[in-house]
Length: 306
Ligand SMILES: Nc1nc2c(ncn2[C@@H]2O[C@H](COP(=O)(O)OP(=O)(O)O)[C@@H](O)[C@H]2O)c(=O)[nH]1
Ligand SMILES: [Mg+2]
Image (cartoon, protein in one colour):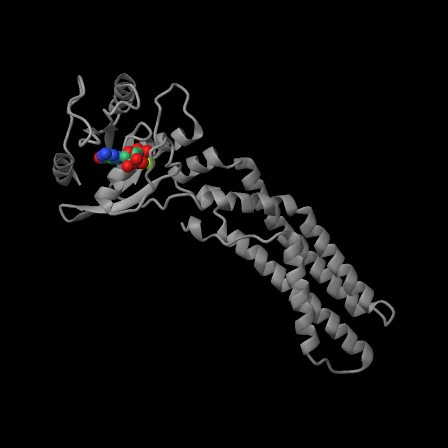
């Protein structure tokens, strides 16, 4: 699913301006034949067709681009529930689908009216048509806006592949993104302050000639109640990880006891390999009660399992 490739939705007014302008231009370029009233009607019908087709293709594109929630896999589905107003999103999609139908009805009605018009009201019938479709679209303004807002959220979503996956987990600022970059040659942003990674960074590496996926997820403070950024980390552990590298940072930013508690929490139900980061800055290479691995030994072990 190409969450980053969803195309932007224009504001309703801009959409209408573009479509009307284009219809006017195309109509002025075309030569209509026949007696005056016939020409007038043909022109009006032609313009209605152009406007209808164009708007329909815009709506079709939106419905094509934006994901249908029930087609999302479990991870993305849960992510959507965390980050979107889920009901508002689904409602917006349904409303746009419905608008498409209404616009088709208006198109057929208006075409019939133009065909039946006499000289006095051909133009008026055309104008009425534009007013009606503008009002339908304006009534849907908030649904277009909500989808556009969702698009900005989808853009931050990682492209996670269904393959063997190692998740790098730990407190904020302990060196998770730095490790991802080192392992996979990615260029995830690293920084000396917490929560630099608000989404998920991903990269790939080869272990014993097999390609695996490595995910760097937001830091977790281990408190009883997670914030929405920490929930992304938990979701990744729960739904995406085959193995976890847990990063301990002994340079003191977070109490070691809290780091051990968080480690124990996930070690209960997952295959976790603890490491110590920033080894150039610390003398001790031990964490009480925890068996520490070297990066090399972790991939040695995983190489046998993948
Ligand atoms: N000296 C040293 N600094 C490191 C090391 N790994 C990470 N850092 C620094 O620690 C800070 C946090 O690293 P980052 O990878 O962004 O941590 P994250 O929040 O866990 O992803 C950054 O300023 C890094 O440059 C390391 O091995 N040695
Ligand atoms: Mg990070």
